[in-house]
Image (cartoon, rainbow, N blue to C red):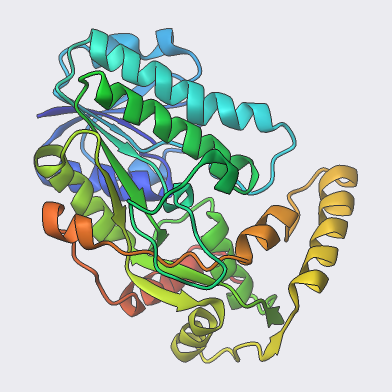
Length: 329
């Protein structure tokens, strides 16, 4: 099977591309001219230099492909120019779906995010059928992914075979950027996590996400959304698990959201706007943190054979990788 893959140089995309290649797929991997290619080492396949924002740069590479695996996304919780995020996540997805139709690509698997779900402050577990609208989206990343997902849903309604996967919070090795979640690990390892807020995440082993992407090529139902999650944990529980792995003390001070918001405001203003660097905390993160991102993966278990794995091994693998690759001072 010949598969066109976007995002293979990223965290989740690396693991998806590796799983596809290990399964015998013939890959064409879209990379930007500026992309670091270290995450592609050991993955069999060809690279196509192009940009999701320039459809003409990669359109020829779709010819003859049996499927598209669209994993690429601009995943940041702070950005100076939000329009670039919407162009990459929304316009890029719309254009890729259109070109895939024109090239008669049989199937498209689109990697969305659990961020498009409607979470609650009381920690009630949500699923794909929980009512949601654009008004539930906090910040540009969530809004852009929600709008991109709507493009995928609309394409499926028009007859295109598009399967939508919604990973929760992936954990594992090769988070080279790192992602916002990876930065939690890096900050903890560097003892820059003195306190915590009362929030919650669903952590999932990135290798199981990758395996299920492969399964979704055949088993996924067009137009369906599938949450791919693992363990629902509070932030304090996550920090305690990292402490058990590393021996680094877990913070014991819980910060009220009001204080966290004040700190984030000054970080955004001074570090972001004045110094031109990414702030360590953002108001968007604080607003997101008021809701516990607890989710159910029952549909993916039933229809895709997804497995809810203990997250402890994935956390250990992530920590070992960050230590081995110079992220810990």
